[in-house]
Each structure stands twice: as C-alpha cells, then as structure tokens.
Length: 292
Image: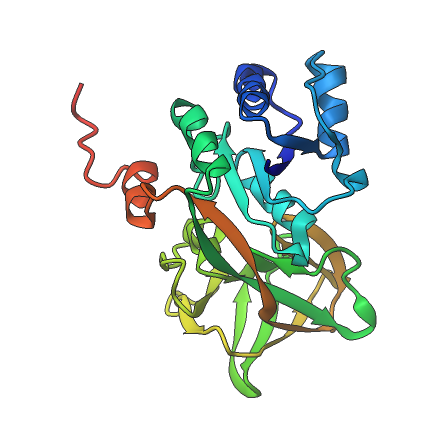
C-alpha cells in the first residue's frame, strides 16, 4: 500500500471535478492519502468536499512515497519547497495553463495514478540553486528549483548588478534585473527574457539579463559548478530577490552568493512523457496556426 501526499492550489473552483477524480481514484487504488493541511482546509471551506484521507501531512506518522501536486507549475514549485530535502518524488497533475513541471493532463489522470501505484514511472533528478547572504538576509526557504531573480523595485531606474564567476569578474549588468536559472527554470522566467532552453539533464546554469541597457549583453550559459557572486547597486537603495516567485526586499550593497545546491528535487514522470514531447506540445512547435 502506497503513502501518497497531496498538495494543491487554492484557486481551482472550476477544476474541482479533476480534484475529486484524484481522490476517488486513489481510494479505488487503496492508497493511504495524506493531504497538506492548508489544501485540505480549502477543499472543505471552498469546495465543500471532504475526501476520505489517512491524515494531514504535517501529522503523518510515516514517510510519503509520492507527492502529488495538483495545479500548475507554481503549485509544483511550492510543493518542491515543502518537500525540501526529504527526497520524495513529485508528480505534477496539470490544472493550470502551460505546465512544464505539472505535465499530467486530466485526460490521462486515472491511467497515470495506476502506473504510480504499480511503481511504473521514472525519476528525473533536477538541480536546485541555493542563495547565501551575510547574516541570513533572506528569511525564507533559500533554495530554488527554477531560478533566483534579482530585480529592481517599483521605479524607473535600472539597477547595476556586478557579477563574478568563481572569483573572476564577468561584467556589471545595467538592467531591470538578472535571472539565474537552472535547466528546469530555462522554460520559465528565463525563457520569457529570451534565455535559451536547456534540457533538464544538462549540467549548466544560465544568466539572463532582464531588459539590459546594452543590446550586446546576451544570456550566458555556464557550468553548474560555478560560484556566482553578485553585488547590487540601486538608486532606490533597495532591490528584490525572488526565489521561484518568493520575493523579499534587500538593501542595496549586500552581496549575494548563488550556486548549485547539495541535493536535488526528484520529479516523477511517465515513461511515455519526454522533454522533447513536452516542448512540442506546450510551445506548439511545428503547429500551423492557420489550420482550422
């Protein structure tokens, strides 16, 4: 009997049929289901739904064999932050929009859950980034699966990001920000600022400037063994640091150290799902939009 942990988004009123199908199928498969406490509260208060469960995750007496993330990629990132170093594989069930991490559609839901309970799936190890500062300036979970983004605040002035790699000065980005992305994050914020797409198995990171002042400043792919040091100047005296969308305000002048974390996030995938297939489907490569 498999122990399944369920996490979910709280903005899914129109997707409640899919949510109910997940719990109905897990019950039929005789899985022991534990639910994130905030998601379980949402199910009861907003959806008037109380599925049969073995308990809440924060009170689970046993380790979880698989975590289900019901939502979009943002929900998957929050699930990964909750799992942390526990090493529990995460399966993303897509009720959101694009879905590179949450790539199991409602059409294949029941079949996929059957495969999971039969241990018929593969695991992809995904690189994370860590952020270090003096005196632990960043108060939250200081790891990111997608990216660490250094950004200006609500002002028209750019920020200057002095950047060094393994102790060697690279450049000073004058821009709205800088995105340091993992291969997983190369299809997220980094891609939206024209960064390259990197396959998940690649041992690289990418530095993608956001609206740089100089047009000859381009995204840069570096080995994931690099130690990245940033020193940020801002006329506003403050700037934002965002880890997978979790943002905090930093004072200008503080130094940031960013690099590859000493553990990975385990992503569960169907054997029939590949990264290249996901690219074709999500980005509509080869599709003729003129067709009706």
